[in-house]
Length: 410
Image (tube, rainbow, N blue to C red; front, top):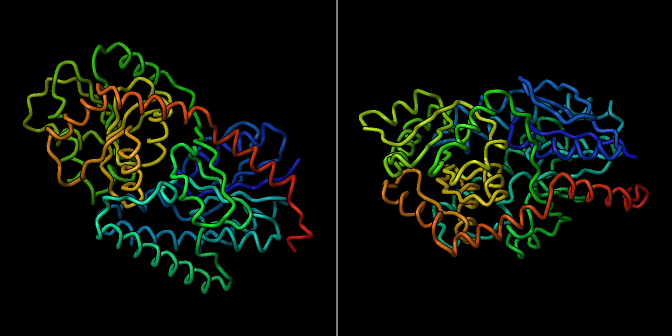
């Protein structure tokens, strides 16, 4: 059995699939340590040892910078995190005496830590947007933004390397093994080959949270409603960010207007004040609920349709249950995910700025009633359920360990 150290930045969307993988590795008998940089509680599976590592908080920082300059400011925060967390992550990893480290792709210093330890690195890739294929309808502006971000990321890595006095890997890929938490059926079959790295598409990895009394009561309320049950969630980093408030309110309002019927239930996951502003002046006929947070993995099977920003974790939960999704992306990786939904026929994308209620209604009616769309959703549900990021990822890690030759590596 191996000693394995896992780490992700303090962002729930990145830590969740890696935590699920760490739990499966521990279940198989490996000694697994998870380096936890969260400032608040983050649940880990049984058998995984937690080591707290001091680092700047990213979730709160990104909430304050999720407006028009979100990409630029997110790199500033990621750079601060990488510089501040390097020594604590290195020391905690060294204390774990690992045979292998498994670090999230958004820890820019992962490769430097692996070199310092002299052990192999497995990179976990939360979102498959790099492997989703090019967006044929993507505007030149979006393409230039994506290119500019890639250049800014490389420049950030160079600055981190100069500050720390160590060489950095600017690609984010490991030369040893990379695990992407998406099934092959979701990805473009040619996209993965373009990067020339060892890659395993292992499928989604979920970390179910035991429901409490409130979760069960909400599930009963949803199950008892006879009609369309719609989840509207733009993610905690978006609806909690002052720079996106007006955009979120407009989206919420037009989604509600589009489905303002007695046979529709809408659950908004957002601060109550945002929902109240979205409803202002409307005669509401639909059933409207709001929560600042929900046990989404537990409640997802109860929904008919989901409106989201296109984040991959929510997307994966939807497709795992055969639920269509309408995405209004805020960032270019989300735009790529939304395009892939359309390409596969299991969802649609709507501009977060330019949209009308009738557009939302037309798309939701089509996704819920069109036979071709329903068949596509069923096929993608099968693809997502055929794989398991925790199980298949652990298989890939064990295959790598079985074939790893440290002498040949050196």
